Image (cartoon, rainbow, N blue to C red):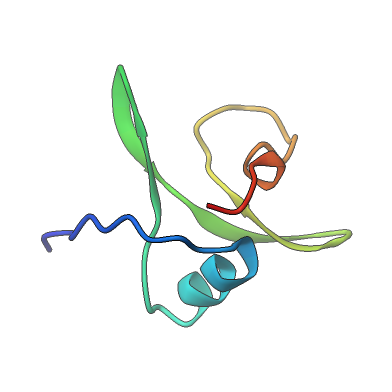
Length: 67
């Protein structure tokens, strides 16, 4: 399957809905590593966006501002 790369403003809640409803996939491109798929995780304070790129349980993606 070929992925289309589209950059559009999206807030976190909408991105979570997009992923859960299988409307869109979101990926992080890294300079020296393969891209990583973003997924939705349920935590103690609700759902958030996450990748499995690193081993930390810290929610790095949620620290980003809406784009």
